[in-house]
Image 1 (cartoon, rainbow, N blue to C red):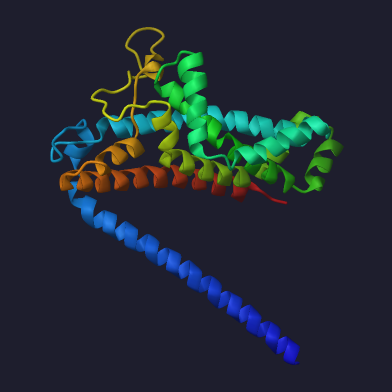
Image 2 (cartoon, rainbow, N blue to C red; image 1 turned 90 degrees about the vertical axis):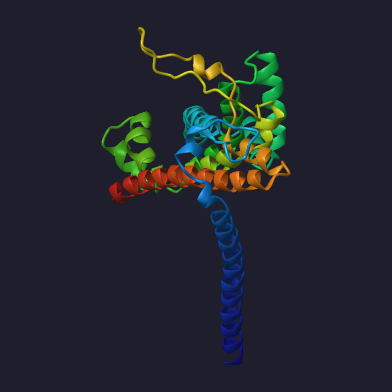
Length: 298
């Protein structure tokens, strides 16, 4: 009886400690958010979104930064997710278990914990210098894609592993091939878990500054990448992929490093915009996850 009471006491104690630790974290997070909102909310407005950076804090804007962020995030997703999901499918469904695949799996797990500045050095050496892409949008997107690729691979593999074997067996029993089973049964069932990895990967990529600074992304850009829509046939232009760029984290870092108080207010407003962009991307990924989850009937 005493032992049961002691175990119950430990359970309650651990519950209270967990709630206390979570509450402290949420309080600090809320305090930071309120401080940023109080400093930067008054700066938000059409002029702030439509103006380029300026030496005068009251005239400075984030047009080139938020456009560059959207460019880089879209390209990062288009590069990382097909590669990551395809790699996870191969490793989980097709590859034979031997020493080579063991080495690949260990390296993927280790790469997920490598500091982001290392990826910046990789992007500088491989994309900027060796492939001669210069400090362009596509070079930045490929650098961030490599950064988040291990997260996508690991989360996709775990999602595929969670699918019951009976799903595959039932599909095979009906005469479906291996690829038909994966495409029509396994992937739709694993999509909620895959989208969770997408959320984590995009959230990390959106806030990364070190890799882009290391590879030489500009801190002051007074122009936009060329539009992907052209007025001439074939009405699509890829010139914008090779233009110089900046992103919101770099612009915020630049403003924070300046001594004038006005730039600190600009930085707070930029943080709010970056949070909004991150929340919108995450909300879209959560919507897709819930959409696929409602279709699952095991």
